[in-house]
Length: 74
Image (cartoon, rainbow, N blue to C red; front, side):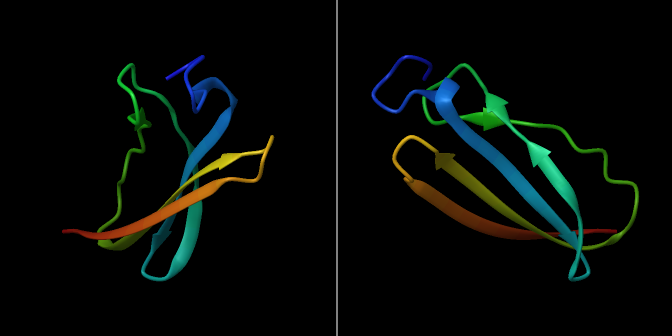
């Protein structure tokens, strides 16, 4: 959360989005009002297999966290 031990206002959080293996963009994410929760919106208009790679990066000390997921849009 902002001002907390891991100050959300100083951490860059974003999701990279790929469709059928090709990068389609990066979605910056914002603090969602609950500790450890970030949000963003992307309007997906094409069917396909999507992969998300979400990362959080603290430039002040280099701490980084990464996770990935996949989903299919029909």
